[in-house]
Figure 1 (spheres, rainbow, N blue to C red):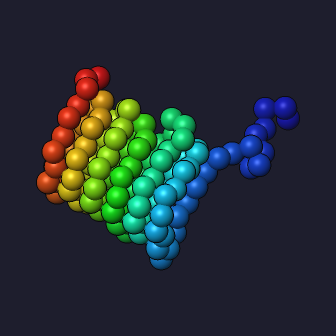
Figure 2: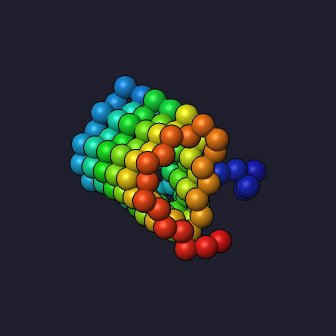
Length: 116
């Protein structure tokens, strides 16, 4: 039973779909945002950030990997992969190592990739 990881050792953040936040946010661990945020989002480690279909983000995002199912207006700075799914809507600036735009996604961006 030494291999069991307790919930206290996990870092996970979930912002619910009826939540509306404004400010500067620093998250660690796997992060899912289903609500609305106006402001800056910083993922402090190399964990995945997921913007759910019900979410609207206005501001700047600093992260490693990002999956976009919802709406983002602003700037994304990613040291890893940004993936925009068919339900995703993105406008603004993207600086990322790797960018994937799935068919059906709506994008209006200035983008720069740094390679694989």
